[in-house]
Length: 187
Length: 213
Image (cartoon, rainbow over all chains, first blue to last red; front, side, top):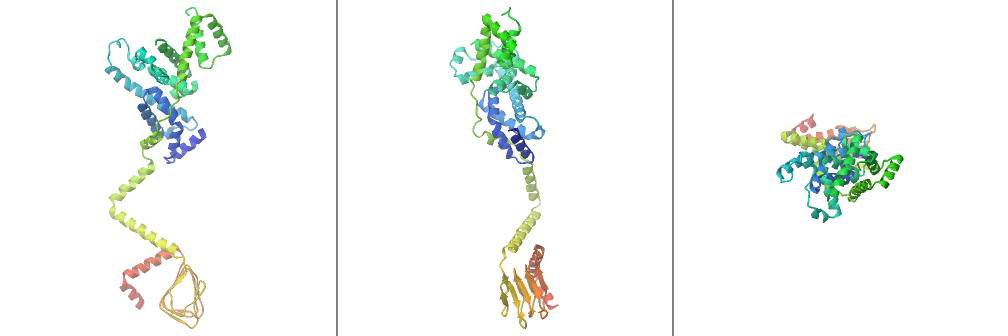
């Protein structure tokens, strides 16, 4: 797998743009899935995942072929997702100054997608519910939980992708699980 | 739970991460068996994980790859092409001249390559033996003689120019040629010959002068 990818990368670097198409085909589903779980919107997921591939293409010469390409492309994608979440949410919360949000700091605004009434959540289908709960997680837990449980990546690889110490990733997975437990428990 | 050992929650997460040490697992199991509160917490955490594990994998939408390829910046090759286009637009006369040369040379090369059949300007009293044209001894050929893709053996007399294109020419001791003798084998010779004949066609006076010399 890695050998094949490195072969394609070398071809792209020699100027053969078409070889990049094979790289996209190999990773498009996993990258789109991660972006969708992080962003919660199909349109945005497509936009960001495609942007991640474009960035990978333009910066391909900086990729160290001794490393794992999947780690590198996941890092580009998760960084773009985190940027998108951070840009989007403050605007959203400014518009949505409703009573009851007082006393919540910016961070909790980033954390919470719209909280729905209990009856509505209970009527959700399983897939909808899963995405709803992931979307309510604070962004820093959402990225580790997505990579851990949607992509089933080892903790060390998540640490490499997010450029965090392994201990920090473990803590975030633990806190993310606990946050999720509390979310479900309050329902 | 306030009375529970601090590390029990840590052990729960180690278990859920799939990297719990056997001794820790034993402590955890023994504690959960006796503590209802911790068992509840552990069940809730397991439920949270179970919910995540229900998530279906997703496929990128149709046309995803095409979308990426369309968004890629132009490759350096394409940039080069653009540069050439700009140059062509800036210098229309040079472009026209270059195009003319390309087309002309194409025509020349193709005629060099395609006429591979044996041919000869037919004159009475020429003898043809296979691919060899013979001017027999004692005969006089009036006019120019051109042999293509064949050999020429001259034993008699030719009153005019002799040209052999891709072939060999043998002159017997009795041979007499009043005009120029040319042998053309290589591409450059061929080009030169073509150009000369073309210019001769363009400037008839000059050729007449040459003839009289």
